[in-house]
Length: 400
Image (cartoon, rainbow, N blue to C red; front, side, top):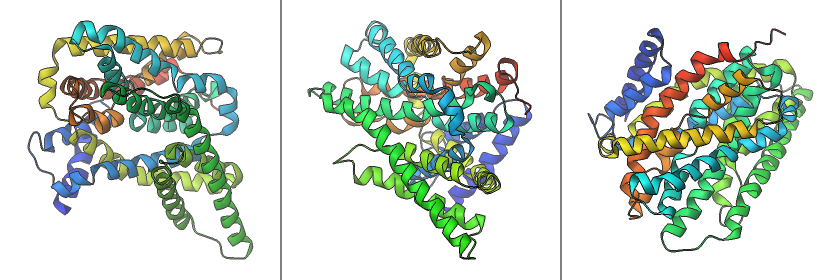
């Protein structure tokens, strides 16, 4: 396991630095390393690491979500309330519609199988989008109109919506029926996640404040560990209460960090954000190398031109959905174009659930996995490059 971790960190960081040096996003180098050392190419990673891959990726995602919460300003989110809510489900719905309409024609699947494929491929990647939006917030690009905050919030909810739809469509593909309760879980999960996170965040602030008043000031490093441990607990609560209620652990983590930032002094929240930023340096490498390692590139060869065409048609549907969400806002054409670009990347969800239809024995399983792999390889770099290269041209810079 130690050798595998050495490969992940040393080779992953080196590839990220090389990518950066030649003007490409760091993610491309890390994904390339993951694909190369995966069991499907050179097979250099220990099976024990691969067995923990899902949990390790989740830990890395939690770190950047806590940092995102510590960077978000709730007053900014209030400015873009309606578009942020719409961005959490409308673009995904449009993309799924694209698959339902065109996948039967291009890929020979039936409508329900096309819906399963759409649910797998329609989720935007928070792993790609969130750290970039956090950077834009910190550097104050587009913040005057709260553009990165809106995208960050929408992308965080998008995955919940898509995963619930995926579970429902898979049940239907296996011969079951969709229940109204399954769709009701989406808003319930979001609301309960936010309430749980806000309550826990307020409790943590009271603990920190009480300790300070008694002369037992908790160092920032210890606060980081407490926040991280609490975030893990919130994610665990999602799993524990799943049979009884739907709760979004990811939104709970963001809400917890938001409340801590809201109540704590600016210097305290800024210090915590900086420390989580340092943790993200290692977590980022772990996340994207392991995402790459989960990609079975053998299936890209079987996907073919039809799957490639389907992916781009669906992205066009997604772009229309994003544009509809922004109707009535103050965003100009360039800013709307940036929102479309920021909603392109696929990676984490596709790597996590892309193989599920095949493991369940669904007839569409192989083509779904093939399209998921192809979508990661194409859209993750495309979205990352698009965001990194366009934000200075498309967004305004708030110098205050």
